[in-house]
Image (cartoon, rainbow, N blue to C red; front, side, top):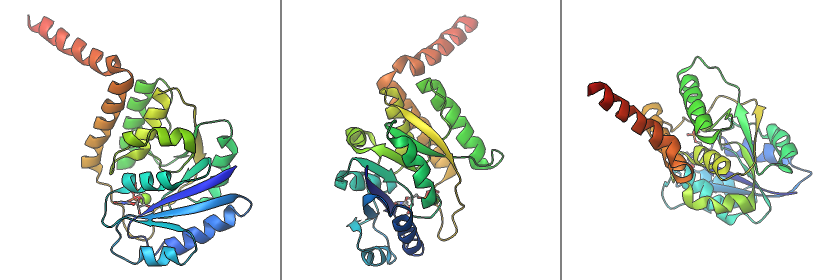
Length: 240
Ligand code: UDP
Ligand code: MG
């Protein structure tokens, strides 16, 4: 198995050196290419990444982490893609537990086993449940960006992926709805230490709903439209 490790990075100069070294270490037995996509960083992410002898793609301005991942996937030349964030939230050691399953599955997702009783925990639970209903399979972590994917299959779905939010959710739903095999592997994840997250819980929550509706209506429109029309029919009937 040859690997293309793809890292979207926006203003991650503090994290890049440690991340690249760890990946090189953990995957020393594998033939691989590391592709870091600098998504228009205003700091020195590009210069720092370029010092490591890895492939660096540079966006002239900030386009979004989805766009960065798409650029990396387009550039990948091996048969297996590893996606992970630049902020060290996805521990490179865990790549090995994902790779173990990658022979058999089209996509392996490193799922977080975080605390339910935090704002994002409850939101994630809600979206996982909704997505499980839409796909008919239990989804443990819809939005994890930590994955190993067969390149050939992944490239087929590039056109569906949004530039900003949220390529992981879109990939998970599109894979499941089109009959590809997906495996969730629990992994430990870290809190972001340096820099800050660019996710906005409310705005992005609405975008999640739209993504779930979008993919569901492509593959099984009745799962969305039927309950809604039944609801309106019944309210009409009651009113009548
Ligand atoms: N990122 C990017 N472009 C952006 C925003 C983020 O390439 O416009 C990268 C970021 O550097 C990180 C990954 O995408 O490697 C995930 O971003 P973030 O940590 O902000 O998201 P969260 O982990 O909070 O979901
Ligand atoms: Mg992060």
